[in-house]
Amino acid sequence: MNIVVCVKQVPDTATERKLRSDDKTLDRDAADGVINELCEYAVEEALRLKEAHGGEVTVLTMGPDKATDTIRKALAMGADKAVHLVDPALHGSDALSTSYALAQTLKKIGFDLVILGSESTDARTGMLAAMLAERLGTPQLTLANKVEISGAGITVQRVTDYGFDKVEASLPAIVSVVEKINEPRYPSFKGIMAAKKKQVQTFGIADAEIDAAQVGVANAWSEVADFAVAPPRAAGTVVKDEGDGGVKTADYLASKKFI
Amino acid sequence: MTEILVLVEHVDGDVKKVTLELLTLARSLGEPAAVWAGPGYSEVAKGRLAEFGAEKVYVADSADIVDYVVAPKAELLASLVASRAPAAVLIASTAEGKEIAGRLAVKTDSGVITDAVGLGEGFVADQSIFGGGVNVHSRVSKGTPIVAVRPNSTAPVPSTGAAAEEKVDVALSDAARAAKVVERVKQEKGARPELTEAAIVVSGGRGVGSGENFAIIEKLADSLGAAVGASRAATDAGWYPHAFQVGQTGKTVSPQLYIAAGISGAIQHRAGMQTSKTIVVINKDPEAPIFEIADFGIVGDLNQVVPQLTEEIAKRK
Ligand SMILES: Cc1cc2nc3c(=O)[nH]c(=O)nc-3n(C[C@H](O)[C@H](O)[C@H](O)COP(=O)(O)OP(=O)(O)OC[C@H]3O[C@@H](n4cnc5c(N)ncnc54)[C@H](O)[C@@H]3O)c2cc1C
Image (cartoon, rainbow over all chains, first blue to last red; front, side, top):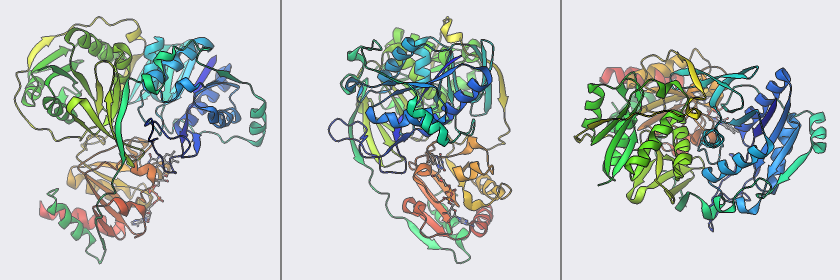
């Protein structure tokens, strides 16, 4: 089985994240880049499926040069090889362009199964997997907290507001996974060493037959009109509990008409 | 005035509150046309949509719309976008709502904005990003604006609409029927409101100390008619199910009132609750960063403060 895991490098959520003042895109230099946490669950799930059913795991990343750190992390976890889609023309791509660029690349490299994290911690749109399914005409098995494969069939548990849906489809398919579907492994020392020798193929937009007019900040389908650092919330009242903390809180809630 | 499509969220035939909010928003920008997808449509539902200003109701209530994951709803909306040329499409910014919005954007070659917390003239959306650190105004620059709006972004205000009904038939494509829902499993959640929709959320963190002790959080929630949330420390410890995690990798909530008990206020937690209108904190550490965003805070032991608060609320009812 040919499994492709899409991973994304995101600014560390623990550092201060910014937009650039010039083109209002994410300032990728301001913060340390780390692998999007939900992508680690996707890599882990891909590795488990490979271990159970055989095949190969390819990491696919779209991002600037420094995203190679993220690729190495996924390779160190155990993925077999990687494709890095990198091109200045892709800078500032929105969800529509990103899904287009990745769909074009996926068509080029081929797949039986594509696995993604359910969202990234920077843009948080949660749309990419659904958009890829739409573009590729493949079944959408998203928000999974369990994935099972038997032959050409695939079943997932899709997390819903009320519990979960059991969803069935045939491969090839697009899967997105939620946090806690598994426990992502830590790369071993051996894994880290081995990752250095694994093949990372670089694709530019021409290699993936991506139309330059469909990607990049200038061609985005939506735009940031303006932005501002959020003003700090007005300082609230903080009181020490003197045995009547609950009563005081109730007074406050009553003053705000919550009770 | 031009039509604005509002995709109706419904459960067991009842229209969800977020839809009433979206109708209210749509009224300020055009003429709301509700789109009902899936079984369960009734006169009661229609009445509810009319009460909050739906001028039209497009009804596609065949079962197969919900028998497959997401794609049929996107197909339905795309056919309406093509035939009615609405000014915009509003969808609830839930996990599934965003997926519908994404597919619809691809189908109609239109821009899409998710997680809007407000929507104004020209469909300029307010967003709060990076864990609440940056406020953004965004707009769609191509196609029909598709905007996914977070629950609790506006208060629903009634204003009667005609609710002229129109049946819509969609012949689903094969691609829309690729992922079949073969079973729906409902997990016990009791009578509490849904976390992302609730007007009040009471969350507990590591400071709660154990799964059993979450009972005091639940009791407080129940006294307020609130939903229960949890920090990742609490879900990681197995004290509360992951479905209730609030934050960066959990649910995003934006209630009228958020009560955080025994939660330190890590940036990843704040990312999921920072747009709450009022924030109340109970924490024994006066230095806990969560106090920085509190409108009201008690420095104290939640084991004392929370039960006392619950009792006090009961007394005042
Ligand atoms: C990529 C990433 C994603 C993440 N996603 C999320 C997420 O979605 N949601 C999330 O919540 N976290 C998330 N985290 C984790 C986050 O960084 C924090 O570790 C977590 O929020 C801490 O939970 P806590 O506040 O309950 O625990 P702690 O930080 O340990 O805080 C416990 C608090 O309880 C107080 N306390 C203890 N005992 C009492 C008592 N008896 N009475 C009153 N107060 C008491 C303490 O003073 C302390 O402030 C994420 C982290 C990463 C790296």
